[in-house]
Length: 298
Image (cartoon, rainbow, N blue to C red; front, side, top):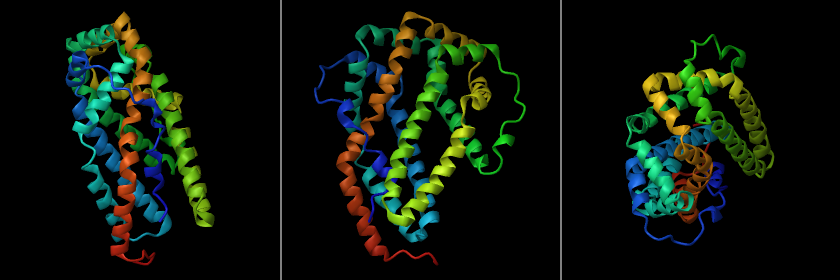
């Protein structure tokens, strides 16, 4: 059985994390607690599960796998998920944050998180992510129809939101996310292309779908929708508080180092998955064996 391409994508370079264990930093523990790191991790795992489930269903549609086999794959993933706990992840997060932020950096970030605007940001960040992802799904759902009709006349954008997106470097972060998606696409296409003629056909279909989606995700077409999401989530007072932080010395350091933090934290799950993928493969093979050969007619 070929390894599921999406699971192979989880194995990013793990050298980003390094091997040295830093000295204990109480300020890092406080930052993780105040910033709801554990809750954010749980949400990330839920999103990962949803992505894997969608991948299983797409794979079944393309290759003709039956529902029983896809359910077997999902059960195998659920079994491995139990091994990726916050208790195992927390030391890795502590190391990453300690590598990126100095004590002075943490002091400034904590001051913001404990302010009214910072508390609002932390409280509403899950809603911001939820609405942003829903907006992206809505866009993706219409890509195969007529991309030109996806972006009708939008409501006027609040000036403070325009300022917030600019000072918060939202476009820069958005562009980085798109580049990461493109890199993942290349790895996924390579995985499918290695599967012979059938794999080549799957790769071509996925490539065409991805190109259409990327065209729809262009920032110039998306910026008003992103601004609308921010405007729905944050009040003018909250937006002004966030802008003030981003323009402060501590906020500028936070924004400057955020890409590195994202890069390093993105390698945490793959580090654990590197040791869990063999177990996952074995579980999937066992489930497939118990399910019998897949058929396209049932």
